[in-house]
Length: 248
Image (cartoon, rainbow, N blue to C red; front, side, top):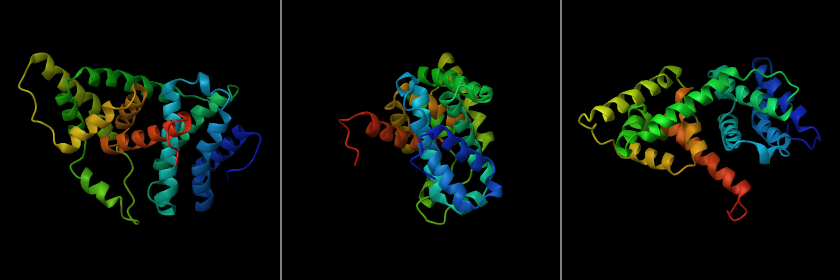
């Protein structure tokens, strides 16, 4: 799928078409396309790269990680809710294709609203104390998150797709934390080691990456997974864009 074409925008368009028709295509072709599409997009946006917003750059790197994860899970990942796994990838690809080729008709209204909502929720989160921030992440993390991450090390484990119902809790949990802080009520119980570690990892990332994490959590991704993708994507970005960082 990754070729030496002089038209990476066309290659990205062809790849996303395969993803849109994934149930009609051989699994190997779909997995090749999902791996290749962010590579083509990166090349298509090369000339525009200096003018992209930091958030767009961060999202493109996160897309690369998300695509690699699906490709690595393989055919069985497509058999387990393939449409749900590919839908957020297709949304991102369509958005970036619209930037690469402004003549394309791309409706990014839903995505734009999600990005704006993430910025607003992050602003609320950022105003909270460190203790409250850790509590918020703890409240949004499923009880079996640690077990799921351990299972992820097994070759046959297929992680579940994000649950939108979990994402809907984000604003409610933030509002509750904000109201508690404003009323000077008794602070919540100190969050556990996982929540404290997530808070620190999130705090160490630039603002655009933190907003990206909020958007992912709002889409139903668990905080450990959202932060994990962002950290990996940020490392990838540093290796590509900072010549002083070891790219080995």
